[in-house]
Image 1 (tube, rainbow, N blue to C red):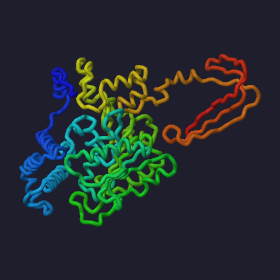
Image 2: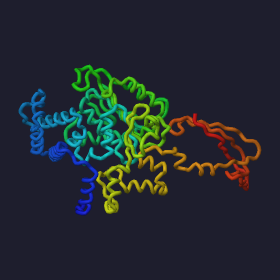
Image 3: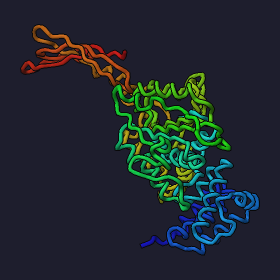
Image 4: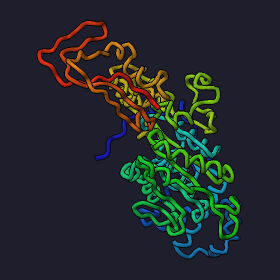
Length: 465
């Protein structure tokens, strides 16, 4: 049963939209209107709605003159297939003008993909502007979904000669997230899109090695090999009007904080061989947790972390990446709740599926109410914890106070252990002793005796190589 509209809630939401969200342009409103007509045509087989949509498209004189010169489009539209062909050309024309937000509203509508949220605008703007983009953000900030939507729109401009690698830490993660989003967006378009979708790729011709391919970067020496040789190829067809003689490559990496360190070498190789800002784009999305990881170092601002303001949302990194920070406290959902107790009490949102005030409070409560904890920085503020996760999750004084030393009975045996993936693939060694212990001495020097001797392990030192 459909929930009956609540006039109070509708007014609260309308007021918040008017205050926090810029009104859509007339052109974008026009695309939303066309989306509704095409939606009826696709899902209700409403030929009349399809005809109305095409008539509206052809009222654009520039477009009608352009499509009239297209030899593949019949001069007289007689069938539904002819009308869908015009709709495809109309979408292509919008993408040609690089209005990806408008194209998204045309083929998906705001219920499926809304380009208005602050976080979405930051991501799509960065991808338009730069070839190397990092997106730092917490839970439900649109990092993955927005990146995949942008990539699909971008691919439509040249599907035969664009390779897009969807990269993740494992195959299950890829299927559930990036590739799952891609499949739903491709199938959910109200205008038929190019390409055939299978369980692991989307391509017009998979044999040619173009289209969307999934790459699972399982840890180990083979991780880097999966990205080896990723570079632009020469087209064996005519020049593309926008991209010239070369193919394009896009690499989208989800959970980039977890990417094996050896895989970054292959990315550096791809970057060094890029032909232009247009022909290669790499997008990395992650929950920022370790600023000393390879991903963290690629996010570090020119001049260091102290050079940016606490609320800054975009900067250039020391290694040449345009980095965007998705801070939940600056999102429309959270700001609307902060401005109205009634909005907050009713748990209203402006943009469903994006992080809300209630979700922010749930994260803070999960840390014991500490809004300066590492998890809150990572999941809410979209920022690396300022003092390192160890100092923030467990305060340094607590770590020191927890130290103790076993009192061994007789000789001990020394040991040395090695962890090749300690804290983001930084190898570490641990040295210590083990043997029989009859008690232990705490941080304050007090001795605690045991009733019987036990086998005990003493960690004397841990060092990152």
